[in-house]
Each structure stands twice: as structure tokens, then as C-alpha cells.
Image (cartoon, rainbow, N blue to C red):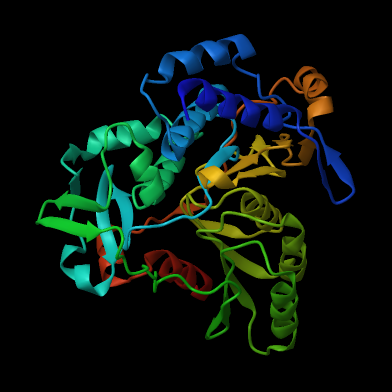
Length: 389
């Protein structure tokens, strides 16, 4: 692509996000509720022309970076759903967590085991703070906690790393840590498997406590099977619902679990990665009396979402996800879904429509570096202790 073609592809994408028509579940969505909330189309065009660096050719990595940059420019901090992702995603065999704003390798494949607990200082000779600054420019976030978890994921995403202006990455990556350097051949990587992550709908029983892992809002039949299994089990009168890491999905699936747990003694586990429809279920569980332990969701509960505006650019290995609804919670935590045709009137009707509201946990418990390295789940241990009192 030349510069003109690059800008045309970006404008075509924005035209779809703002005015595309998508039918879903007998409802017609007509694009983003208010894409030009903060900046006009004229300001968009001016900013885009200013940020694109002149060169002879542009590729999919350039398109990803500039498009992501413009989505943040237009929607930050109100929309963490509208984004562009690589269809074919490849990851480094590492698990990174920020502890006190420092990126640590907390898990990895066996051959890299010596680097567990090490700090990341550079990637391909570039200081990690410069790389974080580049990434921050393309991440739409409503809190520092949400920025942190996106950084943790993006720093292992090979295609995203390749898109950064500060880095030159071809077939290898060298990560400098406070111990030694890690050399990775990007054409010969083993897949990383997080052994600490339990399967969705996993059920564990400890005494009279049933621990339900619910890390993805999907698989309606599995949800039905779980509820049926819980109904016939004897001796369980307390429940832990582990929502940590649940980034959402189909919100209609959650209702059966909330209905079953009503009037039961429940503790819900939460972290910054609880997102989208999982955040809604967190509120539902709170509303039926559950105590919430862990760390608060990174995103505000009032926000744009419902990513039905989807489009693939297969020649660029990219897929666009766009919000079609604004979710508004009033002071009584009643939820309203607002669409494009109603958004301007809603702004007048609800003065606090865009005010960010963050869900707060009842008891904050956060995993430490030692917890990660020793595979100790201090959050779930706290919940078991609370229920055992």
C-alpha cells in the first residue's frame, strides 16, 4: 500500500463502524452509537494525516497501528470494545504480569524456566518503557488497571509487537531481563499453556463449598449441565463463583447461574480482567447478596459495548470489532441499552450518562509475585476462609 491506499483503508473501516448495517437476533444495528463523540470527522482526518509517517510502502502492521491509534484518539476512555485485532494471532511462550508497575515473567514454557520471576528491561535493545509508551498510544482504557492487563497481553502478542514504531522485529526477538537475555526464534515457537487456568464450568468441592470456575460467557449447554449437576449434589450449601479472567461473551447464558444462586451463600471472585457481559453478571451476583473478593474490574460499568459491528480484512489478516450499544447503569444499578438512533436524546435525558462508574470489590485481595511463582491462589484461599467462618 502507498499512503493514500493506507488512509483509504482506514476511512473505509471507519465508515463501516459508523454507518454499517448489521442484523443480529431480529434487531438491526446501524453502527456505533456516537463515534464522533469527542472529535469531528474533520479533526479525525487532520490527526490521521499528521501521524502517518511518510514512506514508500505500508503493510498490515502499519494499518493495524494507525487504525488502533485513531480508534483510541476518537473513543478514549469510553470504549474499550471497539478495536482491531489480528486474525492469526501468535504469542510468545510467556506469561507477563505487572507487579508495582514492573513487567515480570511469572510463567513460561519449561525450557525458559530459569527466567520465572525476572523483570523485563528491553526488547530487541529498546527500553521497555519506550515500548510501553508506544502500546499506550493504541490502547483505549478507562483505568490504569485496565491498561495494565492489556499491556500484559500485548507484550506477548508477536504481531502487535511487530507493529510498534519503536521496534524492528523480523524472525527473532531478544528479551533482556535482570538475569540474562532470552532469544526466541519466531518461526519455531512452542505454544504456551497456562496450567493455572482451569477449564470453564470446572466444579470443585471443598467440604460444603462448591467452587465454580466461570471464565467465559459461552457454551449454553455446559451451563445447563452445570446447573443440573449442582441441583442434585448433596452437602453443598456455600458457593464460590470464580469470575476472574472472564472477558465476556453471550450475556444471556449467565441468567441461569444467577437464578440458581439466588438466596444461597455466595462469594464471587473478581479481577481486572472481568469485562463486558462478565461485568454485568458480577453486578447481578452482587445484587443477589454475593460478597465480592479480589480486585475490581478494570473498565467502568457505563461504557460502549456489544461488538456486533464486525468485519474481516483477510488480505491484511485483520478483523474489526465495533460497539453498537451504550450500556448505562443508573444510581440503582438498573441497566439500559442505548443504540445509535437514541443516543443524542439519552445524553439529554441522563446528565450522568458518560460519567465513569467503577464497581468496587468488598474485600481487596491481589496476587503477589510470590503467589504466581509458587502457584498459590491467595484470593480463593481468602474466600474459603470467609465462608468457613
